[in-house]
Length: 554
Image 1 (tube, rainbow, N blue to C red):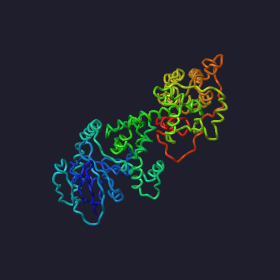
Image 2: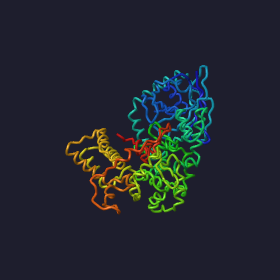
Image 3: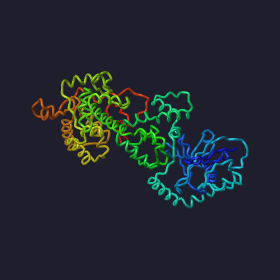
Image 4: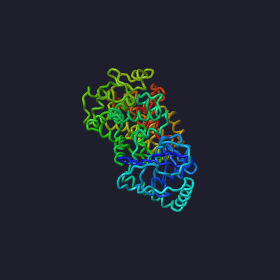
C-alpha cells in the first residue's frame, strides 16, 4: 500500500510543490523520515505533524498530553492509518533547529494498492533560484529499508544533541517573538479544527443554517460570515479598549508566544476565529482577518466604539444602582464624560446600535430596565420599594471603577476591609477581590451577614474572637457607605442625613435592607455558549469573564 501526497510549501506564490508517493501503513516516525527526505530537511531534525482539524499534533517525544486543545501523540507509537486514512491534509514542519525552515501543507490525494518504490517524486513545480530545493533527492531504496535506516539515524542524532536542540528551540522562539515569522493560517482551516457539533453551534450563533452540510462546507460558510465587514464590526463594536489594543498588538506581533495571562483579552478573538492558536502556545491573526479589520477600523468606527463602550459602562451602573431608570437619567450619567455630550436623541440611537446579546438593559418606552429584572416583573417590586427617591448620579471615576472591578475599589471603607483581609487574614490579592465583590453584592442588595460568613467559610477563612470583632465593625462601616439599590444609589449614611439633602439626623450604625432578593434571578438557562465578553447570565451587569467566569475564582 502507498499514499500519493501533494506537498506544498506554504506562503509561495505561485505555489511550490511536489507530488510524491510514500509507503503506507507505517508509523509516523517512518513517515516523518520520508517527508524529511522529500522536502530536504536535515535528517534527524525535530519535526511535528499537525492534523489541525483533529486537534492532534504528532512529535517524536509526544506523550499524550493535551495542550491548548491539541493532543500530542508519539510518532513512533502512532500508525499513519489512524489519521491519514480518514483525513484530507496535514501540516509538516521542522522546529527548534532552524527557524527559517519552511512549513508544508500535505494533501493526502489517495491511498492505493501496490508495492511502492517509496518515497518517490512524481512531479514537482519549483521557483527560480529555489533556496530550499536543489536537485531532486536520490531515492533509490525501498521504503522499508530507507525509513528504518533514517529513523535509527534520527534517534542517534537526537539522543546526542537534544540539549543543544532544546536550547536552539528556546532561542528560536524568543527570536520568533521579536521577528514575527508567520505560519499563514486561514480562518477556514482553523475552524476545521472544531468538532462538527461545535461548528454547528457557532453557525447557529451567527444565524446560519448548516444542518445536513459536511464539516468542510460548514467551516467555509462560517469563515465567510465572520469575515464580512458588518459581522466584524458588530464583534469589535462591543470590545473594550484593552481587548482592541491586544488584538492590534497581535497583528503587529505576527506569530507570537501567548503568555497565560494574555488569554483574558484574547480568548474571545480565538472563539470568533479572528485569532488562531497553536499547540505550542503560539498564536497569530490570519492575514485575511487583518485585512478586513483594516477596512472597518475607520476614525468614525473608533469614535462609535468608544461611545458604545462608555454607554455599556453606564448600563452596568443601572444594574448596580437602579435596576430601572428613565433613559434621560442614564443620559445625564453618560454625558458627564468629556466629549460625550452627544444629545439625547443621538444617545437613544446609540443604544440601538448595541447588539442585543451584548446589551444588559431593555428600553421600554422611556425606561431602561435590567433584562434579568424583567423576569416575573421583579423590577416593579423594586421600584415600589425605592419610592420617589431621587436617582444618585455616579461620577465618571465611579462608573469606570464599578465597570472594571464590580465593586467600589476606591471606597475608603472597602479599602480598609481589603487591607484587613490581606494583613490579618493573610488571603491572596485574588481572594481579597472575590470576597469584597461578594460583600458588595450582599450589602447593596440585602446585607445578610450570614451569607457573607458562609462565603468566607467556603473559602477557608476562619476568625478568632478578636478578628471577628474587627471584621464586624469593618462590615458595618462598609455597609453604611455602600451605594444601595434600595436608595437608588445613595448610601445609608447619605440617606440618614450625613449628605442626603432632604433629611437630618445622625448616620445609622446599620441600615436594614430586607426587601430585595439576595441576588437577581438568573436568566433562563440556554444551550448557547457564553463567551468571555458576553454579559454574565447571573444578572450582575458585568462581563462573564469578570464575574462567574473568572478564571481565578475559588
